[in-house]
Image 1 (cartoon, one colour):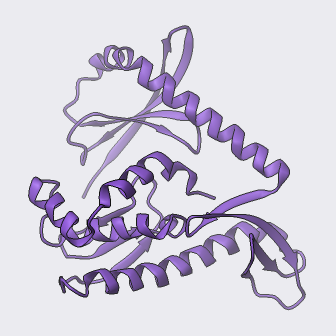
Image 2 (cartoon, rainbow, N blue to C red):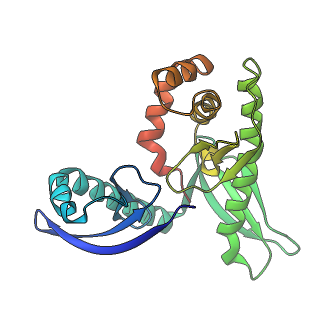
Length: 243
């Protein structure tokens, strides 16, 4: 069973006070730095054997990367706030939609796709549940679409797997367990279909190669030729696939 503990600290980088959280994880194999887009905060994940006395020197050495990522996260947060003031937008299958809420007596919560709009229908008095209704619908659409794409992409290779799970991972788009369960992030339904297909190919390849070796990437290429373009798209734009 994995375990973790957290602590908080701050550091001055180029005159800026940068708070950060350190999470010591038994699962971590190396030091990981990441900037959380939801909170515009720096998070450090460290293995249990890591010497914390060395951390501030490492952060200072990475100051350009850290400040660049924090600035990008702040710009994204500002853009989201601007969108909310003008109307909320989300991506669905690679296309940007304006989200509107409509109140209807007798509704149990639904989403209707109308041209460039996603209309969230809720009963009177439950307008505050619109985001939850939208997320539930997107998860349902993700389950249907991802299972369909697995069938299509696995038709030729007929790789054996156990179950498919749709999850809400914060840092992963997909994973494959030792029990051959395939796990996918529901936010993939927001991405263009070729990008989703890349993640499907990635996890199918893990059924054969549980690593990221040359053999693994050769198998991904065999399952989905040209995957690199879509991998690059996701790396660049994945932060936009959120509510």
